[in-house]
Length: 345
Image (tube, rainbow, N blue to C red; front, side):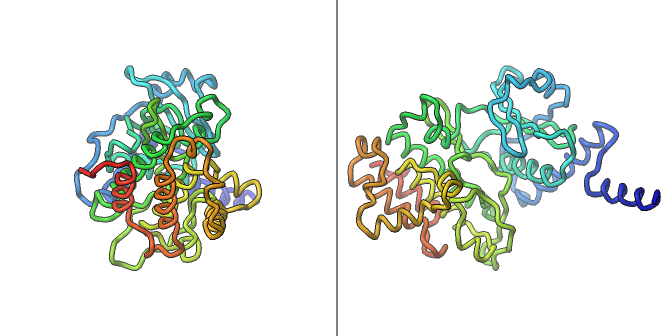
């Protein structure tokens, strides 16, 4: 009995290792981060440069020992604290549970590495990371809100988002995805584009975030099969069917985001409440030639009918059933600039 118990404990420790010192956490987490960075960058020195390393004491001090009053967001994995470090307003993404979690370590370091390697004005900035904790703690620039809460939240800001701001958000997000797909020799696919992954500043400039499910793919080779990840309502149905990841998975999700900006209907809430798919609903309305009935009233007041039709047309091409029928994100950026009435530099 005692031997069996000891064996079970050993197996448990292999799966969920616990180290005796901060140095051991630092070495393990730092090694994984370095491996991910090398694999993603493929030897190309792109990114924001040297990562600022924070100690566990720095994080504890900045969060006032993880003061609940500083919490500005949380999900099943993380709790986000708004605070200052070195006179910068930051968002500290701490694990919700105080225990080692190999899967969460991998997701957290994938996210941090992606932001480190792919430095773009429309991608959230990583200021640093604490590697001394059981799950690494990234420290990001702080932005005002995310697009989901701006469109669907109960706060005063959710009551007004101008058409010009919506076009800016769409264009900024498209720029970020275009960069991810083209900056390196191998495209990096986000895999979780949705309105909660788009962060906004006070002027409604957008930055893409939430890169935990990002993967690097090899053009010209048969797409690798991956487990299905993403947010219900935004996930490419072709990806669901084949488990194959291509850059067109992000194009589909972006098309859903465009429909969300047009209609102010939340794809994930629609799925959660009744299993209704926003894309399917829009397609049926287009077939009946009554899409205008779904367009948000503020959009109808501020946008021309031609602009609405052009954005809706772009969205519908992005959510085509087959990935080969969808545009690239470079083509999407160009089309959005044309809709905004500007020439692309």
